[in-house]
Amino acid sequence: MTDTWGPFSLDEKIVVVTGGTRRYGYYFCQALSQAGATVVLTSRDQGRADETAREISQQGSEVHGYSLELEDSGSIDRFVDAVVADHGGIDVLVNNARTMAGMTTSEITQQELDRLFRVNVVGTFLLTRRVVEEMKQASGGNIINIGSIYGLVGQQPRIYADPEASLSYTYCIFKGGMVTYSRQLATTLAEHNIRANCLSLGGLRETSVDESHFLPHYEERVPLGRMAIGEDVAGPIVFLASDASAYVTGTNLVVDGGWTAW
Image (tube, rainbow, N blue to C red; front, side, top):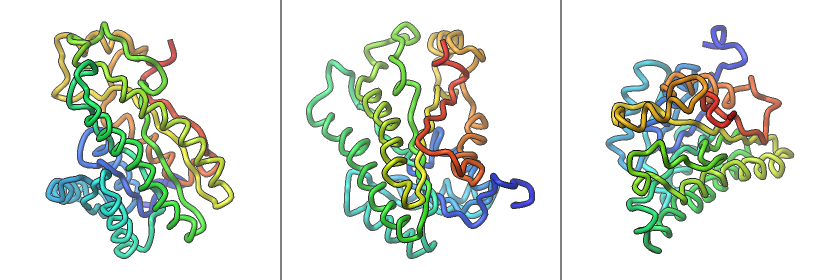
């Protein structure tokens, strides 16, 4: 694959993608595998992780599924120890996993807020810290944090049929934090040859998208006139994961069809 992908080749790279069984995470794993990486994808459900790994590995290089619960620090330690033992290290970490509120903003409870914070902030932090320890020992590494357009601009209530059920103040907080977190990692870890960047994404078109209201209202707001499909993130994730971006760190790459350019 090296001859085909050139500086974008991920041959001999061990790439971890959290939350790799659905939505953008699935497409990340697919693209990284096709570029030659050995992909380690995670899910809270081991069965789902194994099934997705088998499916994607038929299209590219090796893909392995692991169980990971970001709410549990013990699960994080066991996961990193297992990956290092099985594959010898971690070259790239893609912090993609996140959880959403199970209730509207007006109904959200302190308990639900605590759960969101444990997964989206504490869990991501603890996992990254553990992986950074391994990367320092290996004299280098690469961290890619997945952000969102809603970490850069506010949500637009008018594109949602039911704004009360769709708007999420907590999501904006967590995704906005990914941008600054990436910059902090980049500046403080550069001396260890560890890069860190953020990839902020727009909406992904799926079969579950409301085509009667949300889809047309969203797409008329996008300069390119459509929501993203899986293939739209293949190039960006491979670029950031590979040596093609060797001099890129501390940046936020926005892939949104121009949504935030207005």
